[in-house]
Length: 596
Figure 1: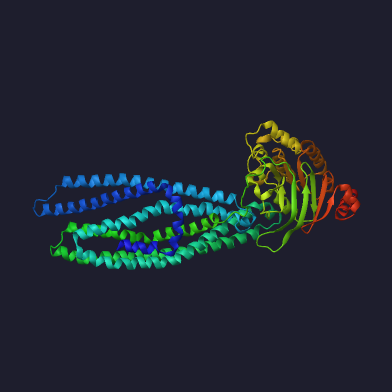
Figure 2 (figure 1 turned 180 degrees about the horizontal axis):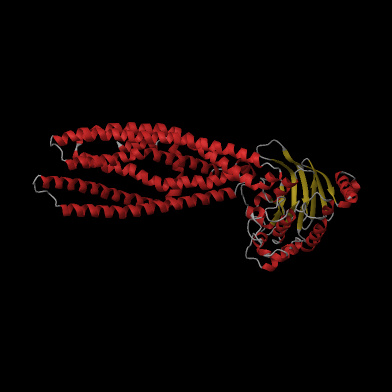
């Protein structure tokens, strides 16, 4: 009966999600089996303790009646102590084994999650915020860990306790056992019915928690903007709404759980009352001893123990099932950038690029960001790119390292399709300094030498000097060991840009891509950096995006983008003679500088 009742749970739809955890449990199957086997032995000693106590009561009753008992009190006492001690030892071993598995599984889940996230692209992070991912990495995995540890212990109780209890009850009274068993499936069916509502409420709680985490993460990341715009009161109000939604969802789940936790003991008490009435009658008629009735009631308690715990167990299982679905939403997400290396590409990139009729549309949009781009860049050439905001400059740069999903047959590196290169080779030999300067909350030394922390300090200082950052660092009390804070919050905008530039220069890659990384740097500093770039980048390909003509004029060739198309191309002098968009930009900046 208990086995069939348990199957009602295991066949329920929401538990199908938990089957996806089997690959994570499989490597630890022997530890799990050892833990469950040890729990089985512990349950045997538990019912042995109950048997010994019941026998002791009968021994005392027989002594009071002047009869000679089958066992002495010393023997009963030894049996009780031995059973308790052995049960304790086996339970300790079993719990340690199961909890170790729970910790190992949660470790593997986090590793898998982190690996999956690292391989995702633009569209993935447009759908899932950082706060949402963090909630899944911490809260959701903790729910699964709780299931593997505490939930596994409860599962053992729900299987082993009824097994030993029914055997013990049948050994004392088949009639009383048959009186109780038909009521058990009704209780499990009730729990199954409540589980459906728990499924909905658990999902709502996890989603509201993700929204709460995303809200906090976004707010703290933009705290300077919030304060600068005097929006603290509005942000507190917005947070109150988000927090209230989470609290309401959690309250709804608590109501459902409380209802189950209240009814389950009620059902159990009804069963116990029935046995006390019927069993007490048998004792009064001398058809059963007091010890046997107490043993039967204790076995009934073991049988009803899973029922009392059913509410908590279903909650744990349900929340873990929802957490598993949320994790697999990330695990199942296929990376936008698929690696298909041909193994025929050169091991070292020289820096020659050819773009053939490149068109690019961002996922989930209908806007053609790049339109019929055709361009040839010779190895060692310096290229400048300019255009209005939204003209496609950054999108074009990201094609070279496949930060976006470059269409096959449109971009060639040293004569080979960019899709034939391993991503690791592209991104290690093409250094890209992004438009948004990002620094980790670590010392400057670690930020500049991020890709190789074992670099010599002299090389780090050289790259800082090339980025016009050396003198600034020397003025810091801790120099290279200066902590820059999260996202480089302790540095100015220009200092962050130069630090990220130094990080790109230190790699001395065959190709260097600079995405508008001089926007927060004054012209004098910019001239210093450009002169050093010429010295250290001679013979190597450099692609530079900038809005300043003073920066672009040093390039061998300049590309002008307009609404995703190349509208002008040539040297600085040739574009000035063309008297088009570039020439108009040069006049505007020259006149603006003159008016100053």
